[in-house]
Picture (cartoon, rainbow, N blue to C red):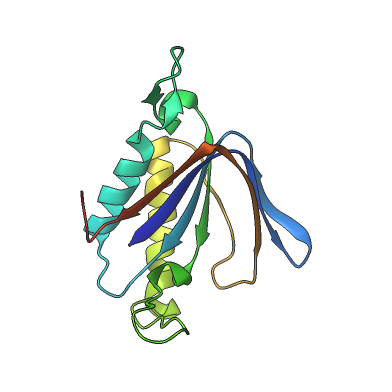
Length: 150
């Protein structure tokens, strides 16, 4: 599982020119699922995201989590996070999970993150053509891959 986590002052998802979801201060999480992902990956990643200290405290030090800030989270599925550009110029998405596996994993991820945060999480629509808008705060952007737990 790969996630691009962006600290935002606002973010939204539009589908067919209609706003599906929007948040104010919080995190935009772009999530890519691959076939080898497990429930353990979900548990580890949602725990990491909910406790990631990337919000500034009163001294301007990134020392607070999304939970400390009581911020919102928007999760958007993005299979292109598993693009391989090793050969040629057209990315290969062979590592990205097919919808029959990816959709249930995405849904489990969202539910588990809601449990961690003790509040609802906003989402896009899996597989839809979405317009994602955001104002990156900082900018702060973190990339996490559950297969490379640094």
